Every structure is written in C-alpha cells, then in structure tokens.
Length: 256
Ligand SMILES: NC(=O)c1ccc[n+]([C@@H]2O[C@H](COP(=O)([O-])OP(=O)(O)OC[C@H]3O[C@@H](n4cnc5c(N)ncnc54)[C@H](OP(=O)(O)O)[C@@H]3O)[C@@H](O)[C@H]2O)c1
View 1 (tube, rainbow, N blue to C red):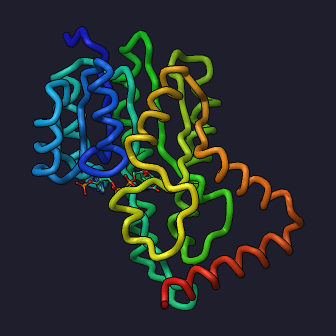
View 2 (view 1 turned 180 degrees about the vertical axis):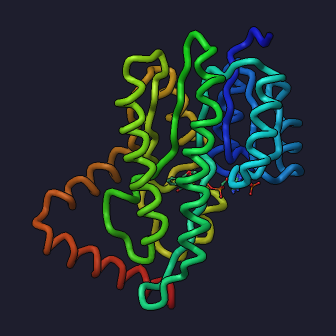
C-alpha cells in the first residue's frame, strides 16, 4: 500500500494539468498523471521522480475501466483527484457544428462524470479524500462562438456544486476550480485579446494553495472574476448588447 499521499491529475500531458502535476510532485505528493499522449507523459515523468503516468482516453469506457483497475492495483486509494482534462472548440451560430458539441460535451462533461463514478470508491478508501473539478469562468458570461465550451462548463460547474451537496455527509471534500485565461496550448490558438492572462505555473500554484486550504470554490484571477460578476449585475438587455459588441470586436480583431 502506498504511504505517500496520492494525487491523480487528468489532462496532465500539457498546459494547466501538466503544471498542476509538477506543483503537487514538487510539494511531496505521489502524482499519477493521465492523458492520451504517452510521449508527452513520459517527458513529464522524466521531470520529477514523484510522477507516475497512465496513458488513457477518458472518453473510452473500456480504457477508463482498465485504468481504474490499474490505479486500484498500484495505489489502493486516491487522496486527491483533479479532473482537469478538457477541450475547447469554437462554433459558428449560423451553422452549428454538432460534432464540436458532441466532442466538447463528451470530454468536458460526460468523461468528468464517468471519472467521478469510477474513482469515488478509491477516494472513499482515503482518510482525507478530495475531489477537484476544473471548470472555467467562461460560463459566467455569454462569449461569442463559445456556445459549446461555455455550455459544457456551465454544466460541469452545476454538476460539481450538486455533487458536493449530495456528498456533504461523507468525508469527501469537493472543490470547483474556475480559472480565467491561462497561457496553454488550448488558449494559444485564441485570436482575440485575453485579459489578465496567467502562466500555467502561476495558475497551478493558486490551485494547489486553494486545495491545501480545502476551498470549496476557486475563481481566479480576481480582476477578471469581478469584471464578469459586475457585467452580470447589469440589466439583462444591456448585458446582452455588451456581449454582442464584445463578440463583434473579437471577430473584427480576428479577421485583421
Ligand atoms: N487555458 C485556459 O485559459 C483555461 C481557462 C479556464 C479553464 N480551463 C480548463 O482547464 C483545463 C485544462 O486546459 P488547458 O488549457 O491546460 O488545455 P490543454 O493544454 O489543451 O490540455 C488539455 C489536456 O486534456 C487532455 N485530454 C484531451 N482529450 C483527452 C481525452 N480524451 N482523454 C484524456 N485526456 C485528454 C490533453 O492530453 P492528450 O491530448 O494527451 O490526451 C491535455 O493534457 C480544461 O478543462 C480547460 O477547459 C482552461
């Protein structure tokens, strides 16, 4: 049986998940890093002796079942699970790409629910079980072309809050992580301004501190969070007009 605390991170081959895996390993945790890209995971493993890897496509139920059996055999329990793997595809309102919705919801929502179901029994064995789910600030405001991504993050934020209610009488602590813009391969393809952009190392250290403190929800950075919350205080019609103007500006910026 593993004596060190075990932290599982999904989507650990790049971006935020990779930075979170390194942050936990450097803080003395045994980390198990999951993603599909075996080569990138092996690079990560070479960076820190405290990182194990497990290549898996989380949208494939047979692969998830095999990974769960492997986790059970290797560690016997999980102390911290961070469900971070996610994707973002922008869509065109006049020709909605159903495939983009399916892919986005499959990973950002369905796989998160499937991982939760699969790994709750391993968390229940821990004396200090913690589950964190990475959503996004994006769902707080209607951004242009974000119908699929924003809706998936709204769904998973709701799922997390509701799950916390139902697990309230158990030792499992459930945290919701809602970042603003973080510099990762996911955002490097964005062609619009990203206010208050953070490095992935900065975001990972904020997440680490929040989870160590047992925070129920982390929304960051503060300036973007407050700006979006302020916009939501405006009358609905004005908020919609502002959102439409911002979407037009972003589209003009992208075409220049
Ligand atoms: N970057 C931001 O500004 C930002 C802001 C708010 C929220 N977030 C959220 O933060 C999370 C991480 O995003 P990121 O920016 O770090 O993106 P990223 O660099 O694109 O990383 C996504 C990770 O998910 C993994 N992944 C994708 N499909 C998978 C699958 N089917 N099975 C297993 N793993 C899979 C990828 O690895 P493989 O391709 O190797 O599988 C990769 O490790 C996402 O949930 C995102 O929505 C990001």
